[in-house]
Image (cartoon, rainbow, N blue to C red; front, side, top):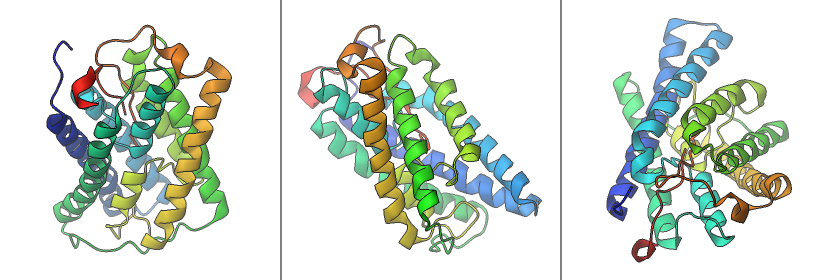
Length: 257
């Protein structure tokens, strides 16, 4: 990418991408419960739709904003910039995070409306237990480690790798891998299969932030820190998140960071 994409356009891509991701997660959950009473089948349908949707969104919007779709990914990319790598500056972080949260809420409302559910209905699905919080730490730490680790000459694999990881984490973590504060907040607005009760949101977000710290620590332990990852990267370096969901920002010079 030879020109700097305007910050407003990048923030819009984060809004649209995060909204579309939540619409996929919530909408597929609603559809699954309409088509089957088997919870295993419902989770399978929900996870497959998320894998396909996340991978597609990363491919589509990665060249615009880096396709973070996740405050944890944005903060991880900012941390790499602070430690000698490349990533967004404070101004981008301040634009991305609200866009991601607003997009997630909008995506939940859109999914509810498409399926004739109340557009806004607070979820009654309690997810309050220490083993679920541990699951979120594990899911988020793995996501952060994967996204930052792929910067070593393998950024082109990010769409498939990140989507695949989120699909697997649906099944191997007790929390079904939210791993995304914006998506967690958005899912509180839908009283459906994928919802989370508002009272359960704060512990989940706290666990995700702990996972961010653990993932960053593992990066230093295994790869030597972000400064060692600054080498072989394309101009629109993908640092994805999905999940929820995503990719860091395109290479940027000063004026906007």
